[in-house]
Amino acid sequence: MDYFVVEGPTPLRGTVRAAGAKNAALPLMAAAMLAEGRSVLANLPDLRDTRFFLDLLGEMGVRGELDGGTLTLDTTGGLTSTTAPYEIVRKMRASIYVLGPLLAVRGEARVSRPGGCAFGPRPVDLHERGMAALGAELAEEHGYIVARAPRGGLRGGRFRFDPVSVGATCNVLMAAVLARGESRLENCAIEPEVTQLVEALVAAGAHIEGAGTRTLEVQGVASLTPLEVAVIPDRIEAGTYLAAAAIAGGEVRVEGCRAGHMAPILAVLRDLGCKVTEHADDDDKAAAAEEAITCARTGPLAPVRVETQPFPGFPTDMQAQIMAAAALADGVSFVTDTIYPDRFTHAAELVRLGARIEVKNGTATIIGTERLQAAPVMASDLRASAALVLAAAAAHGCTEIRRVYHIDRGYERIEHRLTSLGARITRASE
Ligand code: UD1
Image (cartoon, rainbow, N blue to C red):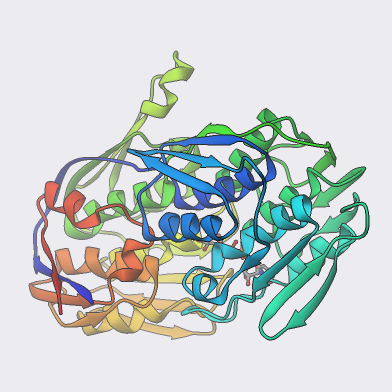
C-alpha cells in the first residue's frame, strides 16, 4: 500500500491548474447510459473514482475509451447488464448513480447497497423513495437494492428531497428525463455539479425547467442524444490548493477554476486573514474557464467560525482542510458540520500533529497553536487525507501518511502538484 512522506515545513509558492470535478464527472458518466451512441466527456479527471466508475459502466456493456482527458462512452447496442456488483460498489458509493439510468433505460436495476463510510451512516433512502415516486417497485435481496419499473416504463411523479441531497437529485433526475409524463422535483440540490448535469441533459434533448433552482420540472422524452460536455473545474480541489497556502504559508495561484462556484470557500480563506485575489476577465465570457485565483498568507492566521451547508453554503468537502488552517490560527476557531455531524476523523490525526482540537456534538473547537510537528498519521477519507497532507507540509519534521489511496480517489497527482509548489513530498510503497 502507498504512503506519503512529507518533510516540513515548506512554504508553498507557484501555480497549479484545477482538474475536472470528480463530483461532476461521475453523474455525467452515468448519464451517458441514458442515450444510445457515443457520448464524449472532455476535461475528465484521471482519478481512482473515475476509473472505478468506468469499470462499473464496463460491467453494463458501456465501452469506455480514455484519451488524455477526453472520455468516450459508447452504448451502441444497448446496456448488457442491469447489475452493479458489490465488488465495485463497496469501493465507491457513487456507484448508486447507475440506479436511475438503469431503471429508465432497462426498466430494472440490481445495485449493491452502499454501506456506511468513515464519516458515519450515509443512507440512500432518498434515491430509493425518489425512484418509487416515479412508479418503481423496490425490494431488498441479499444486500442488493432490486428495483423494477412498472410495465411500460417509469412514469412522471412528484418528489421532495429532505434533506437536500446532491446524489439523490442527480439520480432521480436521470430517471425522470426518460419517464412518461411530467415530474416535479422539489428541494433539489443546486451544487454546480448538479446544475452541470441538468444543462448537459437539456443539451442532449431532455426537457427540464429550473436549472440552478431548487425546483426542477421535467417533461419526459422518449430518447436522448449522446452527451457532449466538458466537465467543470473541481472547486474542492482548487479550494484545497488555495488552503495549502493558508496552512503552509506562501502564495498559490490556481488556474482554470471558477470563482463563482467558490464564493463561500474564498470568504473563509479571507476570514483566516489570507489575501485572496480573483483574476477574471469580465468582458469575455469565453475566458471564464481561464479564471484564476490567488491565495497568499501574509501574516498570522485569524480564527474562524465555519458551518457547512448545502451549496451555496460552505462545502463539507472543504471542512477538513480549513480545520488544518484553523489549527495554526491565532485564537479559537469553531467548525460545525451540519451535513455529516460525524465527519471529524481527521481531528484526531491533526491532534497527533500537535493541533489542539476537541469535538463535541458535531462541532470542533480548535485552539490555534504556533507550530505543528511531524508524526505518523492515518488518512480516513478523501478530504481528511488532503487536510493531513497540507498540515504535514506545515509541520516540523518528517510526517508519514498512510492509506493515501483515499486521496487518489479524488486528487489528480497531488504529490506532483504540491512538489511543483515547493513541498517536499514523496510517495512510497510498503
Ligand atoms: C455528495 C458528494 C460528496 C459531498 C456530499 C455533500 C459526490 C459523488 N459526492 O455526496 O463529496 O460530501 O455530496 O455535499 O458528489 N442523505 C439522506 N438520504 C439519502 C441521501 C443523502 O439522508 O438518500 C443525507 C446524507 O446523509 C447527508 C445529506 O443528505 O446528510 C447530504 O448528502 P448528499 O448530498 O446526498 O451526499 P452525496 O451525494 O452522497
